[in-house]
Image 1 (cartoon, helix red, strand yellow):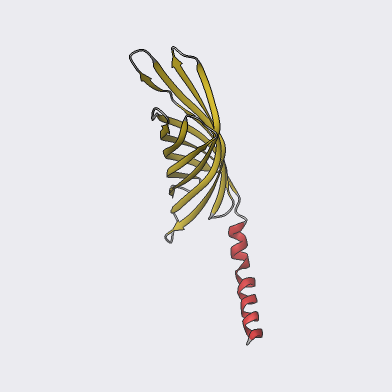
Image 2 (image 1 turned 60 degrees about the horizontal axis):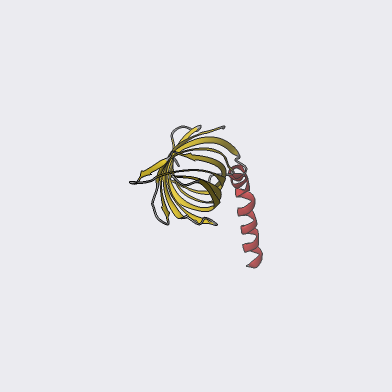
Length: 184
């Protein structure tokens, strides 16, 4: 019985290895851009930002990919009777993504991301001095990805960012919509 089980298991692995190999060696680079709305929690205020990000990534198979990102926000401005506060930030880093294709045609995929980025906040307080604050953000997100054509895909993503080594900022919530071009 052990020999039969071993032979059947070996036959299944040998028989399905071309299918698995064809899927696991699918390396597809892509470029993309996102628009994101971010709500940041800080000590004395809660700035809201509109962001644009650029992404360069690759999918290694139908279930896993990585991407580098660069993000720039607009300026959030708050005026007070004797002062004015302006804030903006930029970020760059690396995210890993896991996909779960759904349905027979696999046009829609569930998506989960985890990554790290360096965040640089520019803070301008009038009449006081300007300051920059930078630290790391640990990023965790989830959403949907939709295959428009084999080359064009779009995605919706919600992400939680926990900041480390920042004295004024605690965490942020980001909601993004994006499009990407895959070099098939």
